[in-house]
Image 1 (cartoon, helix red, strand yellow):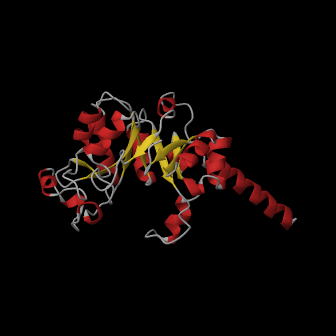
Image 2 (spheres, rainbow, N blue to C red; image 1 turned 180 degrees about the horizontal axis):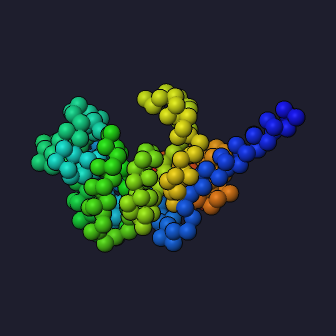
Length: 270
C-alpha cells in the first residue's frame, strides 16, 4: 500500500512539473522574430568595433542581421545599452552603470575605440525599424524599475522588438503590465560550474518551473544546455519557441537552425 501511495505521489509531482514548464504559444506576434539571425551585442569586431556600440549595431543593420542588446537603468532614470554593470571590462573603469547619468556617458570610451556607451534611444534612432531587436533586461536589484522604463521607451518605437531576461521577475512584470510584448526567458543549467547565485536560486531557475507564472513566448538557452530535459519539455511538448546563444561558428549555426533554434551569434559573420 505504501509503495502505491509513493508511486501516486511521484506521478502527481511529475505531472505538476510537466505542466509547470509551459509557456505562451498563442501570441501571433512571436513568429515575426524567428526567421532571423541575431548579432550578439551587435556585429562587433574587437577592439575597434566594440560590443553594444552604435558602430556594432550599424554593422548589423548594414548586413541585414537582427540585433541582440543589453540594457541597464542609470541613476537619472535613463536606459544605457551595455552588458556588464561594471564598466571595468568594456571601458576600463570600475564604476557601475547604475551610478551614472546620461551626461556621464561622454566620459567613457569603449575598449580601444572612440565609441561611447549608447542610450537605448540612440540605438532605436539608429536602427529605425530596419531589423528586429532582442532586448535583454539586466536588473541590478531593480527589476520593476528597469523593465518599466525600458518598456516606456520601446512603446514609442515603430520597429519590431521583443524582450528577454534571465530574471523571471522581469518576465512576470511584462506578463502583468505589457502582455502584448513578446517575452522570453533566458536560461542555462545554473547547477554547472561556479555561480554568484545561491544554491536555492540555481535550483529554482534551472528547471524552468516559473514558466507556469511567467508564460514566456520563447526560451533562449545556452547552446550546451539545449538538450536538457526542461528545454525539451517546454519546446517539444508544449511548443514554446526557442532561441540559442551564443553561436560561434557557421557550422554550429547551420546545425542549430536545422534543430529549429533561432540563433544568437558572435565572433563570425554568417
